[in-house]
Length: 365
Ligand code: F6P
Image: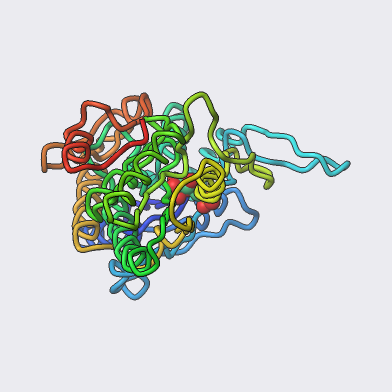
């Protein structure tokens, strides 16, 4: 009898998820002893009654590696460890459905789960694995904030999209002698902003790891205007914050979504610069979810495809409780515990911080 494998994609979507699904399923089909299924919206598909799962046939996965998003959909509000349930009075409570989930997955005849996701999803994978489920993790995030892997697919695509947008903002900033601020995603890690600032040649790059001073930014802007270079392009990470200040975000209003919702710091900075006497008209653009959409770059497709194949090899060898990891241009795996132990902030000694500084990028510090 064929072994049944269940794939889940959890958390925010990310270009490359479909490439993992396709590669894993192809490798499994070629082996001949496996049947691959997907659970819709991470584990919600299994927790639903009736279950919402789909058999991943050749037709279902054909050509999907070039498509953004995930064909089995995703969610950030279905954590089985803190599952949101509405009380009769309309308020919400959280219940732990992890054991029920493991039992249901086993009752459906699944031998193992391929858990594709970021930090939050890997934590869920670890908890399920401790309850006796065979789990293999594949890391994903556009934010590049996982330490246990040198790279995640989706990041290169997000940087490419942000850089393309940045280039467009440079020409309009130059034409109008304006200061244009572009806000990118990344949560508490400044990787997307840092890479985009270097790729695009930004004058100023503001990241969470280096709190900024408005006076310093105004100085940098005004000095450039005095020198006759009358326009400035700034990249700001959504999680950036002023010295002594806090992050610009709001608690999620949807039950089950525990993440602070970032977004909007660019507008805040715009008004602060205007008040502080910055030269030039200031404008702000918030890229938002455009950074997660559309076709993955070739690099991300290749990384995602190779991770899908590696994950299948791990399943075949009964190597469970581990996450695929890309290290030194090769694929290996790490225990799920290691995968979730530390957040990958931009290290201030990172060579790209010095590359940026030495090419005239100010971090507003
Ligand atoms: O983690 C990926 C990410 O896109 C972050 O960069 C961003 O802060 C967050 O997800 C947005 O989440 P949501 O899709 O829930 O708005």
